[in-house]
Length: 86
Image 1 (cartoon, helix red, strand yellow):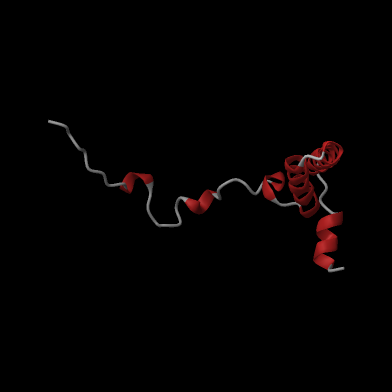
Image 2 (tube, rainbow, N blue to C red):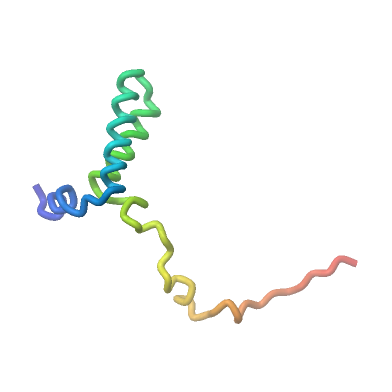
């Protein structure tokens, strides 16, 4: 097994990751019990996120603070044209 994959699977288990694991197991179990493909897919999605620590579970959803200033402009430099209806 790759060391980085092993590290990802075994470390940094925070409460949200445990919740995602529980929800994934619940959806997979209910999907299998009721033969519902949508529940199986949704459960698989949550299990994947919990196992790999990806998605919004690990706090990576936010836009970086420097993203607005990377273009070099600021909000004061915005040019606009006012359109008046006659």
